[in-house]
Amino acid sequence: MGGCVGAQHDSSGSLNDTSDGGGVALGRNQPLKKEKPKWKSDYPMTDGQLRSKRDEFWDTAPAFEGRKEIWDALKAAAHAFESNDHELAQAIIDGANITLPHGALTECYDELGNRYQLPVYCLVPPVNMIEEKSDTETLDFPEPPPNSGYECQLRLRLSTGKDLRLLVRSTDTVYHMKRRLHVAEGVDPLNQRWFFSGRPLTDKMKLEELKIAKDYVVQVIVSQPLLNPTPVEN
Image (cartoon, rainbow, N blue to C red; front, side, top):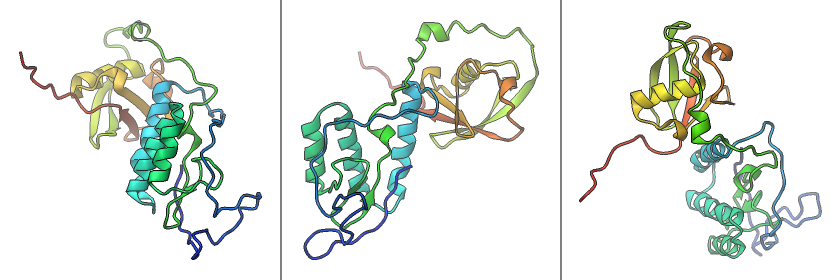
């Protein structure tokens, strides 16, 4: 995960460390390069999993030593960069007085000398992205036989900050458990991303195969707020 560390400017406006050992002067501001870095994820990743990983970073990044307004600017610049709006990304960087010694958002500095590092997954998707299943494919999962397996309570921690225990069956797939959470909390299954011990759980996985010990917590990233229907005016 990215973060930031303190550094100081001298009176000329350059960082005291003049080189990173690779021949790049850290005190010099380079224009943002248009070339996008290429990287491969440790596991094939869907768009939803990538989105969840990014959300987790941006939700926690301001907790580091840097300034929230700089993190906000970097998030906007990263989005513009990924959308191929290079001019907007550069304008955001310049407007926030952010220095890019390497011409990349993976390492940058604010005007106070604080260092910020963006993980590459916040800038571009991996080369081994996989296509997410369509709604109709997901809904094809057969229901487990009635009363199959055994009932148990699964501890869930939602990204909304809520902890709960969900009544499930050992023969449930992750998708069926998502549907149970939908009934209990109003969170659409398509807006749920489940993780256990940092590992993304796919819809086809069965609870009995996951070997989740009693009272261990499954994390659920919710990509939109819990449903709270708003009256529609006629």
